[in-house]
Length: 516
Ligand SMILES: [Cu+2]
Image (cartoon, rainbow, N blue to C red; front, top):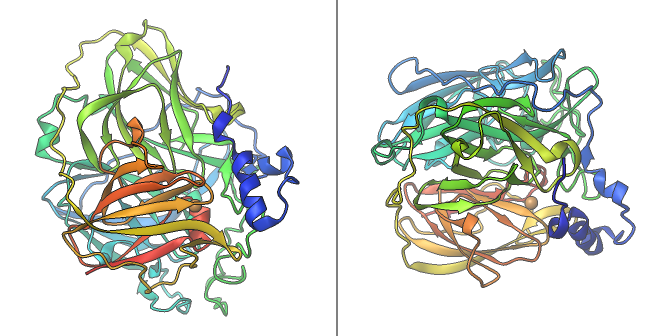
């Protein structure tokens, strides 16, 4: 199968830049070394498009508006015939899908039966600060003797109740671990799932639904020979009862990555692409429209999604909800944390066609994502209306702030600062909007908690068609200036902005801001 080459998106091109800036090895990084960031599996991998696409279970409330979910160690068969230990919400990877409804508050009691602390962030949620999954607001295992390792660190023994007002528009959200210094390995092990907010505005539309609405969590992983997840940083938790001096296990200082210069400082990419936890799965579809809720839940990998043998995506929603009107795309770039809500019309293909979702940024196995096989014609009551919604309007910004994402003195930093919990870099006022000018030295998918934003400009020019709508995550390319208009609505308190390349995040590329 032919693939579009990486071309202008070449990782080597910007690694050279980073190397020149901070590594002192510019020009010495051979292609093989650059590929060292790709972590290859040692397990025997399945043939693509042989494993059926799983659909995660929908979480069931134990009482109206109340959910209880236990994070636990469990075994999964991800690669056929092999056992993978996962750390999952509800013991599954992905975790259950939460179906939430605007105006119906939900409480989720998260019980931690894992050997490590966790913090759960509802990504895209307009959530009070106490339930936002602040990285030092930790649920610790029962009987944990861990001492707080950071200023202001809070330990909730065993259970924490997260309260979600769900006052926001219908949107594709997701939830994942956000533990200080360990988000990347803990998400890699499985701590992620999707959450769909629905509302009356969306219900009134004839969009495909039921079996023709598919949540698709896309992420990459690598596997050891025995089927366990492979990751460059040890996963090991301190043994029960062991109290390490740092409170962080036996892996050295907070953030086990040490100084920049490690092979995986740019981020970890696996060679197996999973959709809903299955390797390169296949789904049978009728020759009708389907709504695909695309989520990039990878630690570091970006994708440029295309359909072969040709076809278009009709985008109906962005990170934070429905667009005003649909937008057609031949390809969708999706960086870690982003979501695209799209409709694909499989009636455009003859029955029997295999339609492959590919990643045009990768060669080899990672160039495939999943496959749809069009099995038969069927009545289609779904449609994409020309008018989808009335999203919130832009309001006039009261100020402009600048956030620069860059390697500084051996860490990934924002405005030259390593993350310092409790030290906000900005204090926007509730109910106002600000322009945030985002720049960087590398590819940094910038995520803002609480606030939703619109992309105003890239390098002073109009944004791409795929930047449309209200978002919470935007891909900032090397030496690019991205202006976003952010609205600070809903709650006062301390929130975060950070790079959603999870290895960068763990290597200090986060900052607090306080809504006042
Ligand atoms: Cu980054």
